Length: 412
Image 1: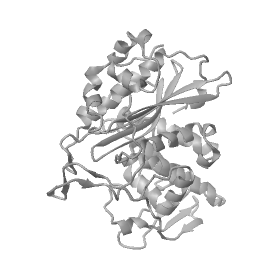
Image 2: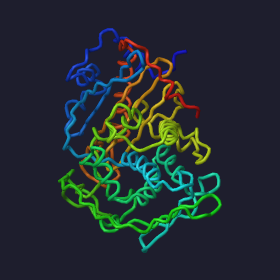
Image 3: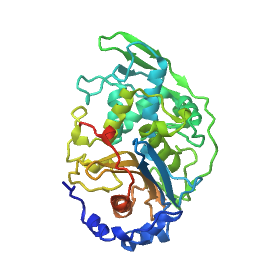
Image 4: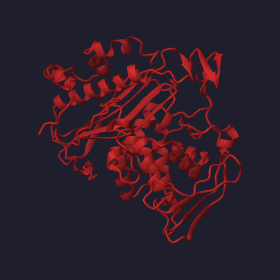
């Protein structure tokens, strides 16, 4: 049965037989066919800092995938604030660290107590969203992928510490990655170098692991990123650009390749893979592709957490129930007017799959920290239309072998 899709899909399908052939300018040529949706962004691509990566996936007769990557306006040194996309590698590294510790009984479901060693540390002894009120790495990762919870990220950041995160990402081939601060938590540079003592217990209360407070000696790459014409410092409007050089940084291609290494680990060098068990992998795949309504613990009311709450590409900000035949494995980020989505899209009904990542700056007035961003008028429509155009192209794209996508079919 054909999935019910927005009207735009049907409009695009009319042109399926005349779609452009892929080449170095493939994405641009495709977007130019729909000026109502993309002309302004194509004309002002640099001011909107639009960057796109699209990966075609083809399977051989043994179902082994091969990848062909296309980009649009991708600029390695062009800064955008990664916002919550940094949560994806941190969630994976939290599972990797558990596996490295090799402590009997210690796993993602162990009780995780976040303690304090000085006044600015948050203390967490319970998690009311859990079925038994126990804070665990399992619960934090669910929250990260279902609704992009900031506190969940901060707890994992404190478990790992700056230095561990940086060393691991460099070793995996991401030397430009910088994850140096908590999210939505105002801390100084020094305070972000200090992380909490963390203790893990089994369900009967036996201490499994006691991690002392850590101090990071990480030396981060120096970069300059001053954006906009003005910004707010508290209630005061300051004339002059906003300074991002001490913020987190993750380039689009790094995020795109981190997702690929998670979903297709055999397609990257062993050194680039995350040290995850199959159980870890299945767990992350499940929750990064689930809708909030498909979770019991934590529970999310659909009035506040609709299906597309963290699915920007293809769905934008639409609040209607989405088709279950399409699943999106992804991580989004939105802050300071930057809107980003890193995705792998699977349509089980039509046997198609592709990766698509994009970022856009939605700050037309050039003022930062004023909470006046163009997410609804520019950002969400762009990501929705981009996803729909690529999806429709994939519907008409010829494949020598029909892919077997059953590995990604999850019971929610």
